[in-house]
Image (tube, rainbow, N blue to C red; front, side, top):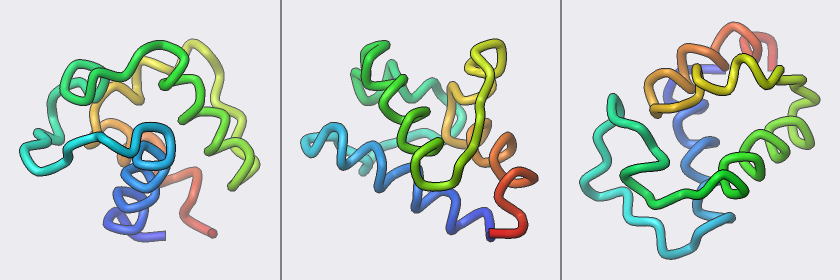
Length: 83
C-alpha cells in the first residue's frame, strides 16, 4: 500500500467518525486531535477501525506514534505494505 493510499484511508476513517471535519488546512505534521478537535473516543474509534479493516493490533504504547497524519503514515506503512 502506498503512502498516499494510507493517507486516504486515515482521512476516510476520520470523515466517517466526524463528517464535519475540515481537512482543507490540515498540517500533516501537527497533532490531528488538536486540528480536527478529535477527543479520546474519536481517536480510539480510528484505532478500532484500523483493527477491523486490516486486522492491525496497535498496542496502546504506540498510540503516540499516531498523533499526526505524517506519523500515522510512517507507523502504518510497514504494517500495510502487503495489503
